[in-house]
Length: 262
Ligand code: SF4
Image (cartoon, rainbow, N blue to C red):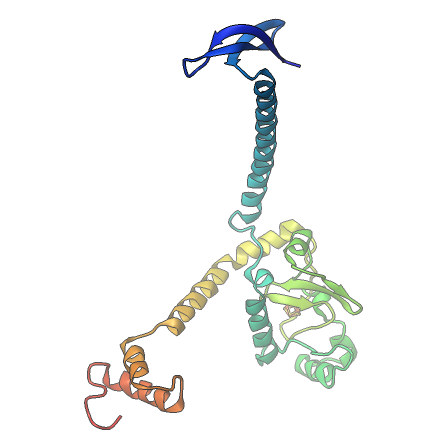
């Protein structure tokens, strides 16, 4: 017990008199630290305050640890690729890779590939058997490094193989699938190589991001015609209102609606 009380008249901090003097042991000596009329209450309050201070120090040290971890994970060039964190973007990039003539990512259903392998073999001018050996799993752009595994938000494996990140087309692709831009040399299974791919892709990824932002901004833009036409039409949106909006944008908001015809 570092605290002691002695029945001794003393002066409290508010200037009134107290019946007991409060001491704390420090280096074998007793040091006066307070004055009170309620010795038990005063000691209990001191212990509670000590506990609180200790807890605050502990939680602060936890926060410090978090602060050290977070910036290192998010430091420029080392953060997870956007498509691994944004399902909508991943789906958009994957769908675009399925549709694009020069990519043709597939087959959609690994168990029922249809003519997929036949078509891609023809495209590569090779046999179906050889085509079936050119998969994401051994493609130079297929990233399954430990750091990329940490970026994956959920389960990465199933009975057919596993997911990895495609550095060519920027989505989570499956090891049992393929695409027309396949290139020998993978997979990427070292963090160092993964970061090198990220560094090489930095410029194009930033440009893509800028384009997405610009598109989003444009899409969400509400001009004078939008407000003017919307105010005129009770049903919104509607085919009539859309037609009027197109006309308004053609003639300008200032001129639209001046003639009798809408
Ligand atoms: S580029 Fe490689 S990793 Fe990406 S989808 Fe094509 S085969 Fe798969």
